[in-house]
Length: 254
Image 1 (cartoon, rainbow, N blue to C red):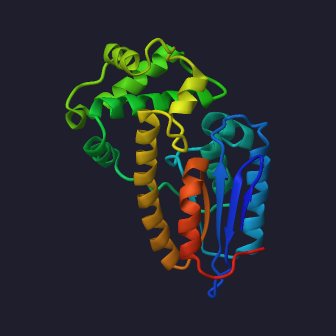
Image 2 (cartoon, rainbow, N blue to C red):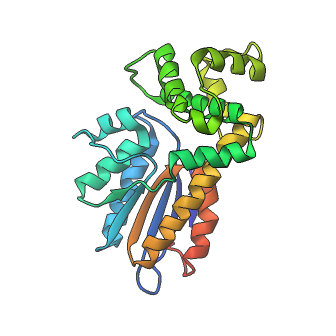
């Protein structure tokens, strides 16, 4: 069963013949503890715990890190990723972060798209995520320099070394006088569900690469008999939902 609510998207599958259950929560990327989706997420988590006795595992979209002792602070620092990892740690349940290698992602994208546009897309996607943080330890210029340096590590793959001057030239080439430091603009071009710009296409391509890898990990863990709780962004949800429904062939929970 899926539920397209004003907050998160929900998919509940199972119980299967061997009593397995899978829950998927599709989140809005937000670092606001007052966002109602985080109450919704916590309620879904409590329901999952109530219907599953053992062999539980959590899939999270972000890398596994130490989380604060406070749920709200975990959200402020890392959004739905922090919230999910906080819930898993509190219940002493293993959380994992199944992601394809960063270099392989860039190699695949550069085999399909122009490498300079790929580098620009990954930098701006990162800057869009920076804007979503409710507290910033740096300003936009510092965030930009940090994002550029991150992509410069993959210079051999791109065939050039990204720099801040290159970024601004590339931005002007793609979007003219559009201001780079514009949260709405960055959100729009980094949304994989839109097809307005070449950047949307690259972000969607990256999402597809990640989804395929995630799916393979889910299948392996599902075969092992575990019950799965997953939290991913809505862009992943719309792709994963039909795949997971096909994997879990028994009647979903009402």
